[in-house]
Length: 268
Image 1 (cartoon, rainbow, N blue to C red):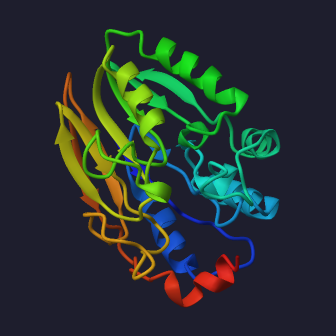
Image 2: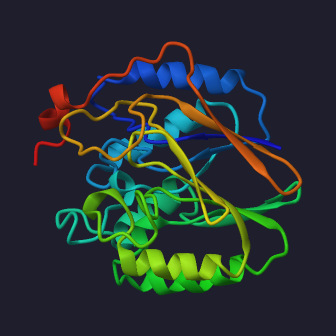
């Protein structure tokens, strides 16, 4: 089974600074032969603040000509209130995502693997859906199949026991709870987005893969996190009990930085 993962397209209805990169990504995806396509969040530029970006994102997905399974990012459904008090995760934002894009968490069994999509943006919010998702996740892990997990924010940056990393990763209490549940299953892959970087590392037998963005990279506005700041995608090739992940770069991508237009896109 071959699965292609993309992330952080940041589709905008009104700003087209990165449109050429999105076109190059879409053209490449349409040319690929893969069993599945997965998008790990920040589908829209500011879909958590402007519904029009969510609908533009839906149209962009429809133009791919193939089904793609998505999990939401912070720019899609909001974040923890201490991270973004203007756009906290709430019922309205979750409802809009589900109506326009589809479920914010999902599972499917494909060719001897269980694939799970988790809504990382619920973690640490105390929203009623957070507890419901933990219960759902625990049930989803009740399988003898090897498991691949997809979510927007990485569980950690460098180590599972590291202190809080703020905006960049899942907060420690939620991280530990997710990882405790993971220990009950044969989790082989945890694939995320959010950081606009690519990195792969193996921790306790699990491959943690950061999928790069398809839109822009971050320059001086982002601290050093240890990944490669380069646009692209990740191809996951699944075997009987193993998965090999490879960075690929579609033709036509340009590693544009967000900083020259950051105040236009996110003025607050």
